[in-house]
Image 1 (cartoon, one colour):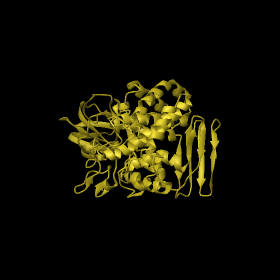
Image 2 (cartoon, rainbow, N blue to C red; image 1 turned 90 degrees about the horizontal axis):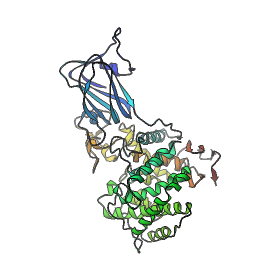
Image 3 (spheres, rainbow, N blue to C red; image 1 turned 180 degrees about the horizontal axis):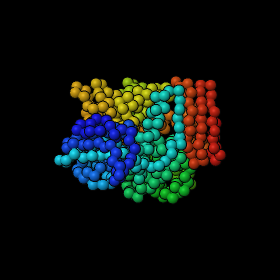
Image 4 (tube, one colour; image 1 turned 45 degrees about the vertical axis):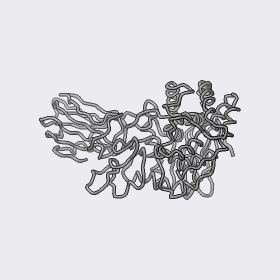
Length: 501
């Protein structure tokens, strides 16, 4: 907490909510005109604050921030409102806010002193239990798993938002890592289905989801991932015609030589947005992934999948160069288009992104992937993160201050001074769902739980350099439990699932 012109501001620390009554006047904080206080709630959460004034109508300014510099600076107002001048009531409480934040600055904007009894945080979050778990011999990885799950939980609002501060939109491509995060951590996965159906209601099968043609590729891949993990046959059958028509449309984007010709808008990710060669290589692999998943969906529904299978075979014949970029190299490796792990292992802690970091992890062997998690996502923890960010670069940390510190002269502000494209400076989201990739990676690769076919589970732990690991993965049938060390592993699979191997 930091205060200027506020008497008894320490009352806000550890205080419990109470209302003023006629016969009892508790100790209270006094804000002189222009007085302000900066509160740190200790961890990012979604919601707002509740202020209890003491018989003091007046005007205050409330500024929310994911970092100290955002709470005291000029935050972007495009999406959730984070900076407002509010009128206090004579009696009762004032509640305001619907965003993700950790810090709040409150300023007396009036000409008379104001007396406050307390300020409390009000969480507006899906009341869902985290039933998945991950614990290992490495405490840093354990904290990263929990922070990654917390990040996606913050974005589980009406639907799966990409960021709960910004953009608060159901972006289909951004959703794929989030979907994998939800599946590894929550028994209630209905928000995935709801988000799918919301998007299908916004665009027809021949229209690009979110007006981005590549995001429809992610839609088909995500539907198959969701079906493998949940066995939600009802959802698959209810929208069978939509899937079939979308795939028939996207088959047209495969040339006779096997090269993709997906129309604009051809978005892969922001770091590769201005590199046509990298985008082509990534989209070639992404369209291949769509056809691989789409063929399985059609066969599961007993539909003719021959055209999609033929498109898949054509795409495998054209192998672009990823132009030294890790995002397309990861997708090429994962889809079997080409093994380009050489690109991932070159200068391994640079050229990483929070969005495509999930695929970069999956495309690597376990040991280097674990080190990347420790260094890259752990680097955000080292600078005060309690949820993971829209983007991050380890080079930003040179001579930079933490997000939970007041900006210091001569040091870089890691929030305000960095970012690019649509996330420059304080517009940059520090609670962004697509950054949750370490959680599903650790559950899928290290715990070793995967669903190769509907209703079937494969358990093959890969500890990398860890001494032991244990955890749970939720399914509609109950929890899968795994405990492993270098000598072997034990697992428990609930009835209703067939264990392979």
